[in-house]
Length: 84
Image (cartoon, rainbow, N blue to C red; front, side, top):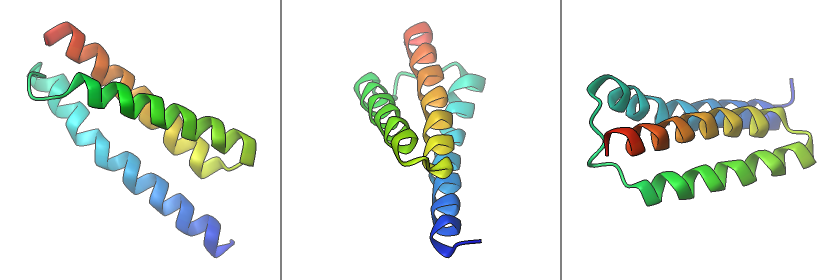
């Protein structure tokens, strides 16, 4: 396997995984007052653009990580709107 692809895949997994604990905490505690809605919207917008960029490059690590993170960010936005 190409070393560049391996590094990209590991980086994609780690950065996506770093966001998971926040989503789990918000989901289980139903507490989102300390989460910035602006940050969530900016993050969702950014990872959506990264995913589109990945599609143009045909890069599975970029596509996979950013579509997964987009789903997590959108869910966090949903929780933020629901629980404020």
